[in-house]
Image 1 (cartoon, protein in one colour):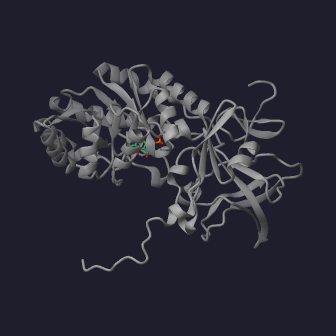
Image 2 (image 1 turned 60 degrees about the vertical axis):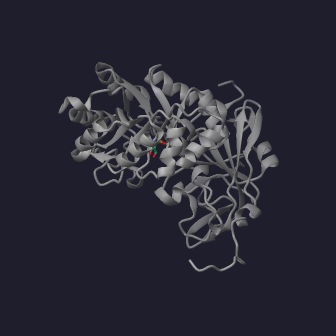
Image 3 (image 1 turned 90 degrees about the horizontal axis):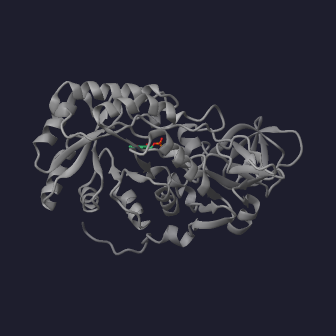
Length: 431
Ligand SMILES: Cc1ncc(COP(=O)(O)O)c(C=O)c1O
């Protein structure tokens, strides 16, 4: 880091750093960016996204297919950045596929997971020539075969196995335990393979697992592969034609606490085993690529001591960043231009009419005045992509920084847009 730059505590990437005490993204001062674009504002660093993709590539090697999980952040400009960094995409809906297409990007390295796919989604993905469908429920096979026969060609499928492995993550983002709705349990996976192999319209190209998000250790990945290997070894038909193993995403980030996830350790544990079988890896990182690469900027509206708590009232809320309310997620929060003075403990809360509307609880923050800017760090993943209109709030603007320049890549929503589908004077009809 050049000598005029200083690390920002809690930022998982050097692209967000301090110069003369103030927070910058790459070569852009965030105070100046907000003067142009207002708040709440998501800001992403192109260099940080590119660097993370390079880390994934370095860990898993040239043979790996990186399918970035669009759900983490589907902004078209982010998708283009990710594509430029060498990745394909993991989509979980026809809408996410539309995003990839709207960004003008190729769809031949798209994998399509999703626990319940509609026919139009399967048709659109088949027409787009995606890399593989991740089958999560046995009933999907009939639909996939029917679309294949309609098109007169075989569709590539990977079976998403539910290995019943505890990923040690928040219950809402655990996806690989037997009680979760995702994937096909090993008990019925054999039958699913038989159906796929027997169909003239389906081609089994691999197995997929995704254990959950924000994983912090190698063990679950190794356990899941061991279970898939044992499953495959139980019947030779299960290995026939298999070329890929998709180990999912889920690589955790530190959110200001602890070390970054050791991707190289996952690769070291899994790659030799995959190579021994001639299986090529697919990885689906979302959070790891964009989480630390984004912040949410918000302005202080006021302060209110009440019932023993000091509430710091800001203009961003749970509708802009749902993770704290939904998962009790803890994002570091810092002042963009810190003032001198002793820190005090505050709850950073938004204007939404829910007690669950908070961005951070019991945070030690330096003194602030109304109008000051705060940055909610590590907000690039599952931030803007989960934003809502609750309380008739407009979803925030998003900007992408590249070196010394920034671009507004999504405008703040307008009230006209919020109301455009409402037809209070619609003609009644008899259904
Ligand atoms: C199938 C699938 N792949 C990949 C991901 C990405 O997870 P993460 O952002 O934790 O890497 C998800 C997230 O839920 C997912 O459902």
